[in-house]
Image 1: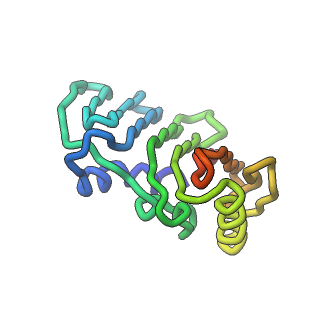
Image 2: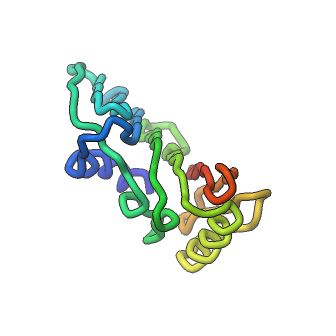
Image 3: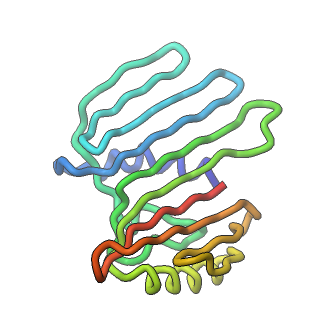
Length: 165
């Protein structure tokens, strides 16, 4: 689940935009060869710290939306924009977890509408989901823990967080 999401970072660079309010993306991956930390700030500042290399470069800011993220074929609620994506990947011997993915987003609908939409789509994609307050919790098709938290933003929008792993 997490490895395909890691591929999203280079692909996201290909859809770069010139806006100043982009999507913040962080990657923290540890493995047998050491730890890699990479981030792209909402302003487009790319920083990399890996065994044998470190540095930063200014790129155009990128803005990810509903079509740039999917979970087993399910994208975010239509019209959603992603404000942040944090990926922690583990491939070190002795670790019993693969890591965690956290996605923060805004949707153009109420929390109840977004929750009900996700419940139907994720259920059809093999996730086991149940209502949890204004969000959902359960497991992915691979049996990994999953949580969707939603909060109102004004009267007709929702701020959301998806946590996988």
